[in-house]
Length: 145
Image (tube, rainbow, N blue to C red; front, side, top):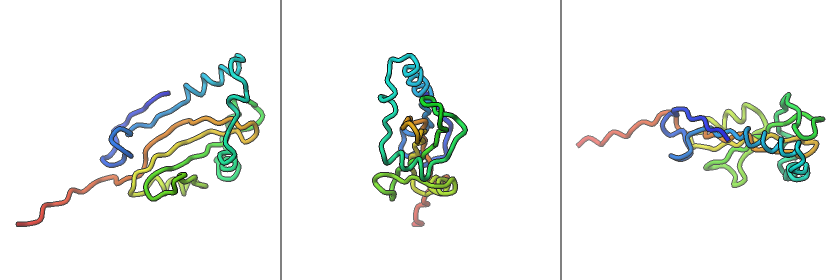
């Protein structure tokens, strides 16, 4: 897991303690090595939920990267967005334009990017990051006396 922290505009984080993008590539690479060494079975890591597989097949964005487990299929990225005024299960944008619109909302949101292999059911959370929220907050001026 790696954390990159950038100064963010006031109000852009979902909460005061969530202001950085978190990447999980190191954890992913460790799992792939464990499968390659035989310490983990493919069935242990290729267990994506049917709803995640459906999202990957229907609204996922294809990558050029091959699946690290089956190597026969290219990976798909699925993004889930959670926040106020969104469904309890979050929103899974089908296009880049829809994702950008969700990230420009006045309410803060938290985005999760998951890589999925629709063929063998490999899946791994790649990163999470805050988005949305007001880019600049104007302070209320006190009422004149």
